[in-house]
Length: 196
Image (cartoon, rainbow, N blue to C red; front, side):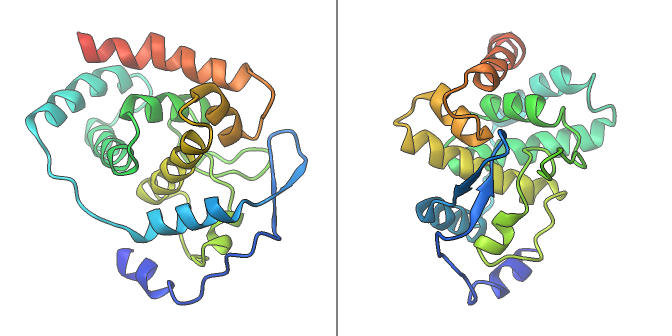
């Protein structure tokens, strides 16, 4: 898949004239800077070596995820992907877990009423925007790469203000419900597993 991604690099359209449909159903112009950040993230593929602290993290998070992802092999594989993609984007992996919990409840085949797909509920228009029309948003690594890049972009844009970044990610700007649900999942479910 990495080779397929690299093959499509030559034909990229970074025009900000397309529009995205946000959670409230309103069309919003696509931010060219976000398109560029997402394109760079999708094309910047590297492996993160597994350290002892990563293995401890995997074990703890696997316990927390066992009720939602029954297959232990897929669960550990998914957690590795989440950890790698979060670290690659400069995000806390627990935050990504909280976003996924709220967005899709860890259903990699989830599709929202607005057409968002996969674990982090990525809108398909992003594939065309960055010149990767063949990317599979139901593929966990691809979905996580997109979602983490988008979330990182909004965190940077909102100067680290998590609630504002989450609202922008979800397309629910000026509303606090979504950010509150993610923050609650982060605080009550994922952060306590780190300190056990």
